[in-house]
Amino acid sequence: MSETYTLIGLTGPTGSGKTTVAEVFRSLGFAVVNADEIAHKALEDKELIKALAGAFGEGIINADGSINRRETAKIAFSSKENTEILNSLTHPVILRLAQSEFERLYDEGYKKIIFDAPTLFESGSHILCRKIISVVAPKDIRIKRITARDGITEEEAKRRVGAQKPNDFYIENSDYVLYNSGTAEALSEKAKTLAKELMNE
Image 1 (cartoon, rainbow, N blue to C red):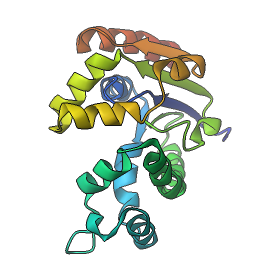
Image 2 (tube, rainbow, N blue to C red):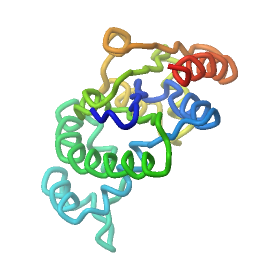
Image 3 (cartoon, rainbow, N blue to C red):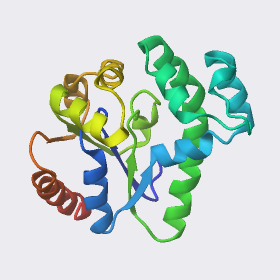
């Protein structure tokens, strides 16, 4: 953990509302590094593309040699084993790129950085964080949000939810927990309160 900036992990299962919370923190002056955006960059790494094709088949490669993210997600989230394979291949690359981004933001003058990472614990990057915030929501609400957000079937959404850790895991392993069973506005208010508290630490 660097002493030059405070890294705060933001995590929680898919469909819980992390994006809403991240935007609140960004609006109040925190830098935000989004692990999903970093993951998109990581998927341009030729060695990683080769490793993923070896694990999940050549069918995940587009005609231009790039990764077909939707096909990869479909296979990777079809079982816990496949999710673990995906994570073991992608996390080292994502973490390397993320750490470069943390340093760049610190050089720009940011002292508090949010790492918005759905797989914060699975990647081992939680050990880099001084504090951890988890956003959790009931499973049925998350499934509805995911189907609406990603345009996938309810069955696919259930598989994604089933491949992730339960809410209890996040609650037990976090410094702060934001419960999101209501509106986005209600979640934003909770996030604002927490952001102001952390900014003043």
